[in-house]
Amino acid sequence: MKKRIISSLLLAAMLTSLVACGGDDTEKDNENKDNGDEAPAGIEAAEYNLPFNIYAPDFGMYQRYFFADDPGTDAMTKAIYEREVSVEDHLGVDIGYTLTGTIQDVRPKIQELVMTGDDTYHLFLTHCIAGLSAMITENLLYDFNKFEDINLDAEYWNQQAQDALEVNGHLFYGVSDYMLSDPNCILFNKGMIDELDLEDPYQLVRDGEWTIDKMMEMMASATKDDGNGRWNYLDTYGLTAPNDWYCNSFTFSSEVELVTRNSDGEFEFAFDNERSYTMVEKLDQLLAGNDTWIYDYGGGNNVEGNFENDEYVDISKGRSLFNIYNIAHLYILRDVDVDFGILPYPKLDASQDGYYTNDWSGLMCVPKTVQNTDMVGKVIELLSYYSGDTVKYAYYEIMLGEKLTRDPDSKEMLDIIFDGVSYNAGVNYFGFSDMNKLFYTPNALIMNGGGSGAFSSHLAKYQPASEAAIEQFNTDVLALDEAE
Image (cartoon, rainbow, N blue to C red; front, side, top):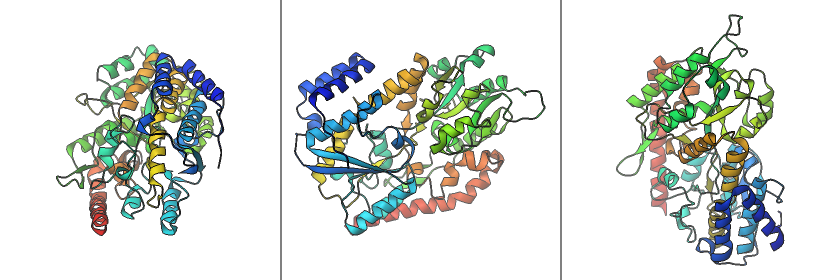
């Protein structure tokens, strides 16, 4: 457990540092909060003199962008520290965190708390899929709707996520500005675009014409053999991509639904439709041809090691026109010589109204054993409220927008990507059930050699179990209400 003691002088210095990095808008926001808002988010000051403990797996965004033991020297760390100090000072709490284990360890930890009535941890940060539906049906979680001081209609709470994840009038998982999202993107080699005299990818995005077909057309111009007559990692490709979860984001970018809701608000299987077949056909062309090099993912906790692998042909190697990448790992490319730009995933077709992707980070939840709901609700609300002007601003605007992008156009593209982050119960609740093989169709079918011709049998194989898992979930949720 850490105890922060911060003087008004130090806090002022931290705010000044963030303003210097962030510009006039942040300065005005901080002035409004410091001078005109005596009850931030409508929450009056308190002196609980209690700990507030957060549990998170040692995974993804949680490793770098959520916690800070001291103010550090960079804007991101200072913002994280400032947010927690603001909440601690306003409510008289001591925020601590445990960052440990894998994404599979969250559910057993909550099970343990509920079984013993333990109230050690007050907020859990989860994976985007692992254990989420089971923790609902096992009746382990507290409903966010029951917190009197959490305003789920506030702008710093994600309304689309609430609509997607609500079950039978309950909201067991929350997404607010506190939960930094973790989408993927497409990087492109600016030098190759110029050399090949290709269309401006940025303008294609703006015009709504950035599609899978357009991407493949451009890819074909870039691919070339190094002269030895064999396709391998030494050649130049139109697209390079890791061989795991990255390509599953095409389901979201193609606006293909895994589940929908019926008239009773229950989830229904929705993947067996014409649009799914069209997506698979196009992805088969995109990912399985000679214009694409698929390399070993290597694991998310070893991004530096991946970077040093010669067969890991990412944008830094200079031999790919396009490269599928994780935005949270852009810091690895900070000093590379290749000049690259950032794009959203392409649309399935130009008729789509926007560019969409999913969040590979996680959600937040509260164990059912929560005792002091007054304190816990207020802390969560203030963490969410303060995140917009501190951590969220530092991450999107300063770190990504100013430090890791190389032109204003890429910053514009990042805005489009993050504005299009969305949630769907088919992934979040059923993505690791039998529906896993359907959500993972780009990887499980196309990238493993099955091809689009095998999609009908692939669907027939996994659809019955997927439908059964959805039906069982609906039944179990209804039973929870009937038991109360």
